[in-house]
Amino acid sequence: MRIGLTGASGFIGSHVVDALAAAGHQVAVIDLRPPHRKDIEFREATVLDSVSLNDACAALDVLYHLAAVADVNDVVADPAGAIDLNVTGTIRALEAARLNGIKRFMLASTVWVYSSAQPSDFDSVDEGAAIEVAAARHVYTTSKIAAEMLCHDYWSMHNLPFTILRYGIPYGPRMRFSLVMPVFVRKALHGEALTVSGDGSQHRKFIYVEDLAHGHVAALCDAAANQTYNLDGSEKVTILRIAETVLRLTGSRNQIEFMPARAGDYAGRDVSSNKAQRELNWVPEIDFEEGMKRTVPWLVEQLSKEAVAAASDG
Image 1: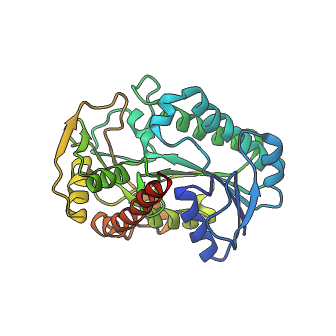
Image 2 (image 1 turned 120 degrees about the vertical axis):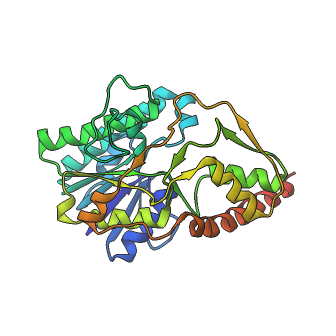
Protein backbone atom coordinates (compact mmCIF):
# COMPACT_ATOMS: atom_id res chain seq x y z
CA MET A 1 0.00 0.00 0.00
CA ARG A 2 0.98 3.64 -0.44
CA ILE A 3 1.21 5.00 3.08
CA GLY A 4 1.91 8.52 4.34
CA LEU A 5 2.83 9.48 7.89
CA THR A 6 2.65 12.94 9.42
CA GLY A 7 5.24 13.54 12.11
CA ALA A 8 7.20 10.53 10.88
CA SER A 9 10.62 12.07 11.46
CA GLY A 10 10.07 11.86 15.21
CA PHE A 11 10.91 9.09 17.65
CA ILE A 12 7.88 6.82 17.21
CA GLY A 13 7.28 7.75 13.59
CA SER A 14 10.78 6.77 12.49
CA HIS A 15 10.29 3.28 13.88
CA VAL A 16 6.85 3.00 12.28
CA VAL A 17 8.49 3.93 8.96
CA ASP A 18 10.99 1.10 9.46
CA ALA A 19 8.25 -1.41 10.27
CA LEU A 20 6.03 -0.41 7.33
CA ALA A 21 8.94 -0.45 4.88
CA ALA A 22 10.03 -3.87 6.16
CA ALA A 23 6.48 -5.11 5.55
CA GLY A 24 6.80 -4.08 1.89
CA HIS A 25 4.72 -0.90 1.87
CA GLN A 26 5.53 2.22 -0.13
CA VAL A 27 6.13 4.87 2.54
CA ALA A 28 6.14 8.68 2.37
CA VAL A 29 7.20 10.86 5.31
CA ILE A 30 5.11 14.02 5.68
CA ASP A 31 7.05 16.33 7.97
CA LEU A 32 9.22 19.43 8.12
CA ARG A 33 12.31 17.30 8.74
CA PRO A 34 13.64 14.67 6.33
CA PRO A 35 13.32 11.01 7.36
CA HIS A 36 16.17 9.21 9.11
CA ARG A 37 16.85 7.03 6.06
CA LYS A 38 17.52 8.03 2.46
CA ASP A 39 15.40 5.32 0.79
CA ILE A 40 12.11 6.83 2.05
CA GLU A 41 10.16 9.47 0.12
CA PHE A 42 10.02 12.87 1.80
CA ARG A 43 7.06 15.21 1.29
CA GLU A 44 7.74 18.45 3.13
CA ALA A 45 4.59 19.77 4.77
CA THR A 46 3.11 20.75 8.13
CA VAL A 47 -0.30 20.05 9.64
CA LEU A 48 -0.44 23.76 10.45
CA ASP A 49 -0.84 24.52 6.72
CA SER A 50 -3.75 22.96 4.86
CA VAL A 51 -2.41 23.69 1.37
CA SER A 52 0.94 21.93 1.80
CA LEU A 53 -0.70 19.10 3.74
CA ASN A 54 -3.36 18.49 1.09
CA ASP A 55 -0.68 18.32 -1.60
CA ALA A 56 1.46 15.97 0.49
CA CYS A 57 -1.41 13.52 0.94
CA ALA A 58 -1.96 12.98 -2.79
CA ALA A 59 -2.02 9.41 -4.15
CA LEU A 60 -2.00 7.71 -0.73
CA ASP A 61 -4.06 4.74 0.40
CA VAL A 62 -3.53 5.22 4.14
CA LEU A 63 -2.54 8.20 6.29
CA TYR A 64 -1.00 7.75 9.73
CA HIS A 65 -1.35 10.94 11.75
CA LEU A 66 1.41 11.10 14.37
CA ALA A 67 2.25 14.82 14.31
CA ALA A 68 1.49 16.29 17.73
CA VAL A 69 2.90 18.09 20.75
CA ALA A 70 3.64 15.05 22.90
CA ASP A 71 5.81 16.48 25.70
CA VAL A 72 3.49 17.49 28.54
CA ASN A 73 5.93 20.19 29.61
CA ASP A 74 5.61 21.77 26.17
CA VAL A 75 1.82 21.59 26.49
CA VAL A 76 1.97 23.39 29.84
CA ALA A 77 4.26 26.06 28.39
CA ASP A 78 2.00 26.72 25.37
CA PRO A 79 -1.44 25.11 25.76
CA ALA A 80 -2.98 27.10 22.91
CA GLY A 81 -0.21 26.04 20.56
CA ALA A 82 -0.65 22.42 21.63
CA ILE A 83 -4.39 22.54 20.94
CA ASP A 84 -3.70 24.08 17.53
CA LEU A 85 -1.32 21.28 16.57
CA ASN A 86 -3.05 18.35 18.29
CA VAL A 87 -6.68 19.21 17.59
CA THR A 88 -6.81 21.64 14.67
CA GLY A 89 -3.89 19.78 13.09
CA THR A 90 -5.91 16.56 13.31
CA ILE A 91 -8.91 18.02 11.54
CA ARG A 92 -6.63 19.43 8.82
CA ALA A 93 -5.18 15.94 8.38
CA LEU A 94 -8.66 14.40 8.30
CA GLU A 95 -9.76 16.93 5.72
CA ALA A 96 -6.67 16.24 3.61
CA ALA A 97 -7.46 12.53 3.80
CA ARG A 98 -11.06 13.16 2.75
CA LEU A 99 -10.12 15.40 -0.16
CA ASN A 100 -7.56 12.89 -1.43
CA GLY A 101 -9.85 9.88 -1.17
CA ILE A 102 -7.64 8.14 1.38
CA LYS A 103 -9.07 4.77 2.42
CA ARG A 104 -8.02 4.75 6.11
CA PHE A 105 -7.01 7.41 8.63
CA MET A 106 -4.82 6.11 11.46
CA LEU A 107 -4.65 8.31 14.58
CA ALA A 108 -1.91 8.16 17.19
CA SER A 109 -3.62 8.56 20.57
CA THR A 110 -2.58 7.67 24.11
CA VAL A 111 -3.51 5.63 27.17
CA TRP A 112 -3.51 8.96 29.00
CA VAL A 113 -7.18 9.19 27.98
CA TYR A 114 -7.89 6.65 30.74
CA SER A 115 -7.04 9.23 33.36
CA SER A 116 -10.57 10.44 32.53
CA ALA A 117 -12.18 6.99 32.63
CA GLN A 118 -15.10 6.60 35.00
CA PRO A 119 -14.36 4.51 38.10
CA SER A 120 -15.42 0.88 37.87
CA ASP A 121 -15.30 -2.32 39.87
CA PHE A 122 -12.68 -3.74 37.50
CA ASP A 123 -8.93 -3.49 38.05
CA SER A 124 -8.19 -2.75 34.39
CA VAL A 125 -9.64 -0.52 31.69
CA ASP A 126 -10.15 -1.27 28.03
CA GLU A 127 -11.28 0.52 24.88
CA GLY A 128 -14.92 0.48 26.04
CA ALA A 129 -14.26 2.55 29.17
CA ALA A 130 -16.51 5.60 29.49
CA ILE A 131 -14.76 8.96 29.60
CA GLU A 132 -15.83 11.39 32.31
CA VAL A 133 -16.01 14.94 30.97
CA ALA A 134 -15.59 16.52 34.41
CA ALA A 135 -12.55 14.40 35.36
CA ALA A 136 -9.38 16.21 36.41
CA ARG A 137 -6.88 15.76 33.58
CA HIS A 138 -4.11 17.35 31.55
CA VAL A 139 -4.65 19.60 28.51
CA TYR A 140 -2.62 17.05 26.54
CA THR A 141 -5.18 14.38 27.43
CA THR A 142 -8.05 16.62 26.41
CA SER A 143 -6.39 17.28 23.05
CA LYS A 144 -6.13 13.56 22.35
CA ILE A 145 -9.73 12.85 23.37
CA ALA A 146 -10.84 15.65 21.04
CA ALA A 147 -8.72 14.24 18.19
CA GLU A 148 -10.34 10.82 18.67
CA MET A 149 -13.80 12.38 18.55
CA LEU A 150 -12.96 14.10 15.28
CA CYS A 151 -12.13 10.73 13.72
CA HIS A 152 -15.59 9.47 14.67
CA ASP A 153 -17.10 12.68 13.27
CA TYR A 154 -15.41 12.22 9.90
CA TRP A 155 -16.65 8.64 9.75
CA SER A 156 -20.25 9.61 10.52
CA MET A 157 -20.20 12.73 8.33
CA HIS A 158 -17.94 11.71 5.43
CA ASN A 159 -17.56 7.91 5.62
CA LEU A 160 -13.80 8.20 6.17
CA PRO A 161 -12.69 4.97 7.87
CA PHE A 162 -10.33 5.35 10.81
CA THR A 163 -8.30 3.37 13.31
CA ILE A 164 -7.27 4.84 16.66
CA LEU A 165 -4.13 3.50 18.34
CA ARG A 166 -3.79 4.40 22.00
CA TYR A 167 -0.10 4.20 22.83
CA GLY A 168 1.39 3.15 26.09
CA ILE A 169 4.48 5.12 27.08
CA PRO A 170 7.12 4.20 24.47
CA TYR A 171 10.86 4.00 24.96
CA GLY A 172 13.86 2.86 22.96
CA PRO A 173 16.59 4.15 20.62
CA ARG A 174 15.91 7.56 19.01
CA MET A 175 13.73 8.65 21.94
CA ARG A 176 13.66 12.34 22.83
CA PHE A 177 16.21 13.38 25.43
CA SER A 178 13.46 15.19 27.36
CA LEU A 179 11.74 11.90 28.29
CA VAL A 180 12.20 10.30 31.70
CA MET A 181 14.71 7.60 30.78
CA PRO A 182 17.19 9.90 28.97
CA VAL A 183 16.85 12.44 31.79
CA PHE A 184 17.73 9.75 34.33
CA VAL A 185 20.66 8.48 32.24
CA ARG A 186 22.02 12.02 31.81
CA LYS A 187 21.88 12.63 35.55
CA ALA A 188 23.48 9.26 36.25
CA LEU A 189 26.37 10.08 33.91
CA HIS A 190 26.80 13.55 35.44
CA GLY A 191 26.80 12.33 39.03
CA GLU A 192 23.49 14.01 39.86
CA ALA A 193 20.64 12.65 41.95
CA LEU A 194 17.72 11.13 40.02
CA THR A 195 14.53 13.01 40.93
CA VAL A 196 11.22 11.16 41.12
CA SER A 197 7.79 12.85 41.33
CA GLY A 198 5.69 11.83 44.30
CA ASP A 199 6.69 8.52 45.88
CA GLY A 200 7.57 6.95 42.53
CA SER A 201 4.76 4.40 42.74
CA GLN A 202 2.91 5.77 39.70
CA HIS A 203 3.15 3.12 37.02
CA ARG A 204 2.81 2.63 33.31
CA LYS A 205 3.12 -0.38 31.10
CA PHE A 206 6.04 1.03 29.14
CA ILE A 207 6.15 -0.30 25.58
CA TYR A 208 9.36 -0.87 23.63
CA VAL A 209 9.13 1.25 20.49
CA GLU A 210 9.71 -1.58 18.01
CA ASP A 211 6.80 -3.51 19.50
CA LEU A 212 4.67 -0.38 19.18
CA ALA A 213 5.70 0.04 15.54
CA HIS A 214 4.71 -3.54 14.72
CA GLY A 215 1.25 -2.76 16.10
CA HIS A 216 0.85 -0.11 13.41
CA VAL A 217 1.48 -2.68 10.71
CA ALA A 218 -0.96 -5.13 12.29
CA ALA A 219 -3.65 -2.42 12.43
CA LEU A 220 -3.76 -2.17 8.62
CA CYS A 221 -6.00 -5.24 8.49
CA ASP A 222 -9.63 -4.82 7.43
CA ALA A 223 -10.90 -5.83 10.87
CA ALA A 224 -9.30 -2.71 12.39
CA ALA A 225 -11.44 -0.27 10.41
CA ASN A 226 -13.38 2.08 12.70
CA GLN A 227 -11.86 0.48 15.79
CA THR A 228 -9.77 1.67 18.72
CA TYR A 229 -6.87 -0.36 20.12
CA ASN A 230 -4.62 -0.08 23.13
CA LEU A 231 -0.97 -0.82 22.31
CA ASP A 232 0.54 -1.05 25.74
CA GLY A 233 3.28 -3.00 27.47
CA SER A 234 2.79 -6.28 29.27
CA GLU A 235 4.07 -5.40 32.75
CA LYS A 236 3.55 -2.60 35.24
CA VAL A 237 6.67 -0.49 35.68
CA THR A 238 6.95 2.21 38.34
CA ILE A 239 8.94 5.38 37.92
CA LEU A 240 11.02 4.27 40.88
CA ARG A 241 11.92 1.03 39.09
CA ILE A 242 13.05 3.01 36.04
CA ALA A 243 15.38 5.09 38.22
CA GLU A 244 16.77 2.00 39.93
CA THR A 245 17.27 0.22 36.59
CA VAL A 246 19.14 3.20 35.10
CA LEU A 247 21.46 3.34 38.11
CA ARG A 248 22.17 -0.38 37.83
CA LEU A 249 22.76 -0.43 34.06
CA THR A 250 25.01 2.65 34.13
CA GLY A 251 26.91 1.47 37.21
CA SER A 252 26.09 4.74 38.95
CA ARG A 253 26.09 5.16 42.74
CA ASN A 254 23.89 8.27 42.59
CA GLN A 255 20.98 8.81 44.94
CA ILE A 256 17.25 9.02 44.19
CA GLU A 257 15.44 12.12 45.45
CA PHE A 258 11.66 12.38 45.76
CA MET A 259 9.92 15.58 44.65
CA PRO A 260 6.30 16.81 44.88
CA ALA A 261 3.98 15.22 42.31
CA ARG A 262 3.18 17.22 39.14
CA ALA A 263 -0.34 18.62 38.79
CA GLY A 264 -2.41 16.61 36.32
CA ASP A 265 0.21 13.88 35.99
CA TYR A 266 -1.02 10.53 34.71
CA ALA A 267 -0.76 8.20 37.71
CA GLY A 268 -1.28 5.16 35.54
CA ARG A 269 -4.13 2.73 34.96
CA ASP A 270 -3.96 -0.97 34.27
CA VAL A 271 -4.73 -0.77 30.55
CA SER A 272 -5.73 -3.95 28.73
CA SER A 273 -4.37 -4.68 25.25
CA ASN A 274 -6.41 -7.88 24.93
CA LYS A 275 -8.42 -6.49 22.04
CA ALA A 276 -5.27 -5.92 19.97
CA GLN A 277 -4.08 -9.43 20.81
CA ARG A 278 -7.45 -10.93 19.88
CA GLU A 279 -8.19 -8.98 16.70
CA LEU A 280 -4.74 -7.96 15.42
CA ASN A 281 -2.69 -10.89 16.72
CA TRP A 282 -0.40 -8.31 18.33
CA VAL A 283 1.50 -8.82 21.57
CA PRO A 284 4.59 -6.97 22.84
CA GLU A 285 7.66 -9.22 22.62
CA ILE A 286 10.33 -7.15 24.39
CA ASP A 287 10.00 -7.02 28.18
CA PHE A 288 11.14 -4.04 30.23
CA GLU A 289 14.47 -5.50 31.33
CA GLU A 290 15.48 -6.43 27.78
CA GLY A 291 14.21 -3.12 26.41
CA MET A 292 16.30 -1.18 28.91
CA LYS A 293 19.37 -3.26 28.08
CA ARG A 294 18.91 -2.13 24.47
CA THR A 295 18.02 1.46 25.30
CA VAL A 296 20.45 2.55 28.02
CA PRO A 297 23.65 1.81 26.02
CA TRP A 298 22.22 3.77 23.09
CA LEU A 299 21.43 6.69 25.39
CA VAL A 300 24.90 6.57 26.95
CA GLU A 301 26.46 6.65 23.48
CA GLN A 302 24.30 9.54 22.27
CA LEU A 303 24.76 11.59 25.43
CA SER A 304 28.51 11.00 25.30
CA LYS A 305 28.57 12.29 21.71
CA GLU A 306 26.54 15.30 22.83
CA ALA A 307 29.02 16.03 25.60
CA VAL A 308 32.00 15.78 23.22
CA ALA A 309 30.28 18.11 20.73
CA ALA A 310 29.49 20.61 23.47
CA ALA A 311 33.11 20.55 24.66
CA SER A 312 34.35 21.10 21.10
CA ASP A 313 32.01 24.08 20.66
CA GLY A 314 33.18 25.52 23.93
